[in-house]
Length: 635
Image 1 (cartoon, rainbow, N blue to C red):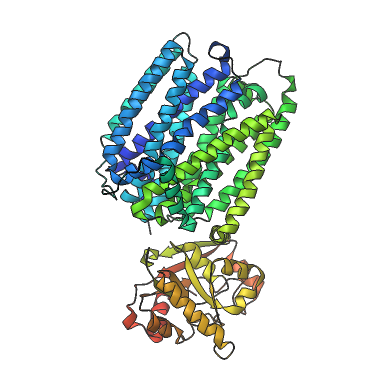
Image 2 (image 1 turned 60 degrees about the horizontal axis):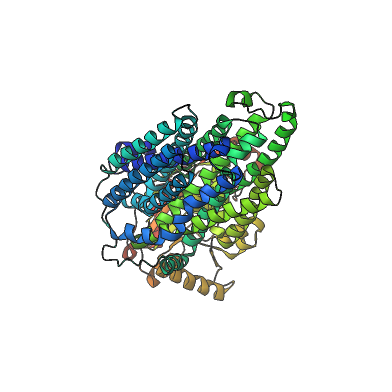
């Protein structure tokens, strides 16, 4: 079925004004911060006697300090007040902060500029909960991945453009500081104008009493989020990404100058490539996920962050050896750097770190928005911002300590990449659903080409029983990878003994079942587990044939489905798998090599979902007819 392109949201008022407000805010943040970092790195002596590396790590830390102090209050305000009006207030605040910064540029006063950095941190703190709570309020669930992808793309394009313009404007002689001051005020005014176009967005909790004790409220927010384990661990994963990104990005100015022997244009080049990577990765998420919240992309992103982070270390060592011929004290521009041996490998690593970062962050944002309590979403985002801030402060502190202990910046890249591997293994061991979805996603995007028909008939919330024909040992993986939410599968207990598939199904909390004559206790326990899962509002999928087909035809449905519905009155949704009979993991007796040659490298499959059947109308015979009609002649 054809679906609207995610960019079509940019033509709609429910999304476009919000997008441009967010874009201009990110643009202005970086227009200002990058200009300050560049002037400190490349013209330090006229501003301060402090070490440039200390200042360049201190500025990001000061920017995110307000997240620690004010995120809890910001989350309450975003839940209590209408979001369009609150956004306009935040944008007026930005205009005032940029006026203070302009005074700092004109008077050559560093600490006034650093105060404006803190002010922009306050601005971003107040806008953060509004931003991510606005999307699920205005977008449909199937639009969340695309909407988040476009938003993240716009954010990083805004970051890129702000970084480029900030680095270029501030070094223009003799009026670069004036150009910078005027540009930041102008962009703030444009953001304010865009905010006045954002449509009315009602407050989810208008009667909420705001607690101004940020310490107790921060603890309360985080404790509330911890009740939903998947959401809380997704928040931790999100915060880890910002820890990783802060460690890498904060080193770019000094890395460009001291290791690449470049001027400010080299710094801009690194930021440009990184931002393009994040933007492209964010946009690709919708295509790779099939327009649903696909958390299987998170481990994929994490693997890339480690692999290319490690390679960036080795690429930096190789470049240092080749750059020995560059005269001491020389600072090459971007074009000259591109001609240096090894530079393209460094840029490729930076691009891939950004791209895999997009794969990592977009599904996590969408998962948090989808699964947290709608009445508490702004405060959940605020809690996440607090964690983000703490992680980023920790990143700045760790960088200062490790560099102070004598580590080089390439070695810091290596440490960060290896830390990412350790953290990823820990998080995925706590939430195996991430890894299971990744393996399922990998299967259907490498071995198969899977098309879904009417998959939106699977309910986005609430209990239901899914019934499907049973063709192969990977039926559950295909269904689970294409479904919009987690499913509890009821499966033959012997499958759990298979080396890889058994681990996947145990991780997915599948329910083992055995025939009554073989193990009556296990059979009865399975029915109890099914009833409990349905009572808790979960989806349960069964294969009523009870065994894999040996002929490709659909066997008679057994009476277990009727027993399940007698205990728990929920809708039953018939489904059919097409095209799996030629799979190697079936009981097809045809020649294995002949089948493999006929289906090719990527076989075509379909999952067809039928209309829900009311519990009072459920019979095994009727369900078999419905599944057979959905499957048709294509086995």
